[in-house]
Image (cartoon, rainbow, N blue to C red; front, side, top):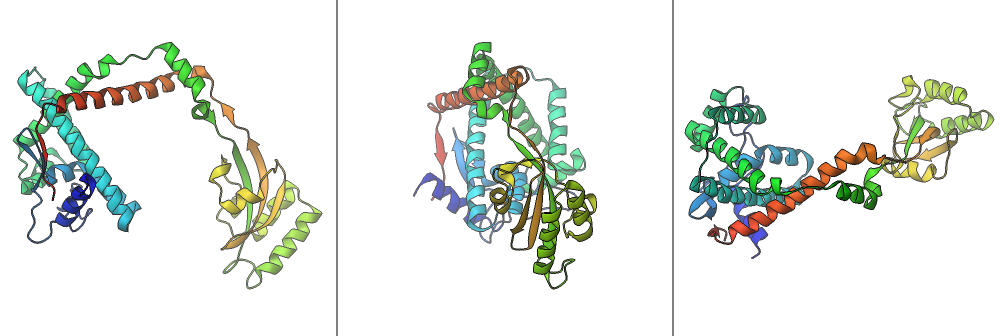
Length: 338
């Protein structure tokens, strides 16, 4: 059985849901509800003898899992949740190994920094206060002392990673410019098109029971006068569109994001052109091209900082990955999957 499949069976056999709130409505911390006969504190991996439980993982993924449950369902939800938990386990293992380095050679971390991070925990979990957060974690055996230790761990690990990885990365001006020139697609603002829509619903629209007749009549009027003034008048009088009262004008959007029927109908069209009727499942559309903003390159002077930041983050991620592979060589990491 593959590593991924083993974790899938572990996490989804132990949990009946990935998004049920576990505590009071005022608490946004949530964990899956264990099925009968299972324990959410089951160990999923150990790092040099220190156990990491399913609860440890879910307390870090809970917020994102709720988001996933609102976007996906079925097998897609299972796959996305599995991937998230796999990534989180690797992150926790990495953090534990780095923290061991701190414990071997500890340095002073101001108490105020720990307090600040605990306050951040409160904000990110949505708890009303520090006391509320601590109370919500009690059923899972997480004491205020353990929470403080977790804050210390996060700070110590980040300091060490900045020292041993991030500060080793330097991006030269030459590299920034070369990356800008090598990826023009990243620094090009796509073409945007602004439309004016006249919508005739197939059912329950202003045309009553005969939308085809309404479409023919509108097409005849536009053949006689396709000016902006006349098109706007027709929109105000006849359109079923949500923005009809405002003249039916849309905000500028990238052409590729339009619905397929519109993309095909507007191919090679220019400002002022009128097309239609364009047939869609729910309505017929007449479309006037209000304006087209051509694609344009972002000047290097404007993109410079963003290019450098993107390169820096990419190199830091690579450096941290190398560092992880290095420190795990001498570690004893055991995965407890069937």
